[in-house]
Amino acid sequence: MAGAGRPLRSCDGSISPRYPLTEALTGALFVAVLIARGASRTIWLDLIFVAALVAITRIDLEHRIIPNRILAPLALAAIMLTALFEPQQLPERLLAATAAGGCCSPPRSLTPRDGDGRRQSWPR
Picture (cartoon, rainbow, N blue to C red):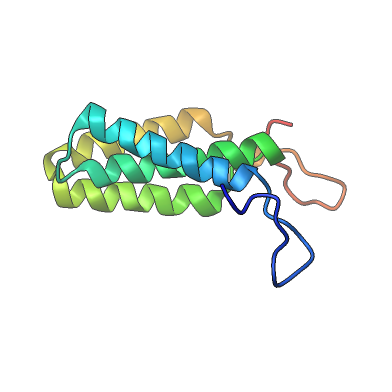
């Protein structure tokens, strides 16, 4: 956090205090996960999930959106790591993900459009 508020060399901007605080929070959550779950060969799935949730939460608090650029790679990583480390749980987790995605996402035909015909994020 020593660099927070100081000017950057490449531009006239400065580092927001939110960035080092986010990094510190992520590190503290990693430690909490390691203490709660113990070091195992599947801990990477938990740590990736925690890091993604921190990023998603920070972006959503600031912009009121959850970017698919984070969600899609997270879903793929979860599938690959589950298939690699816990293959017996893969069918159950895929079914749960499909059910959650189906009940939590509106059908594309129901998402509202703006005046230019582009789809809006839903709900607003």
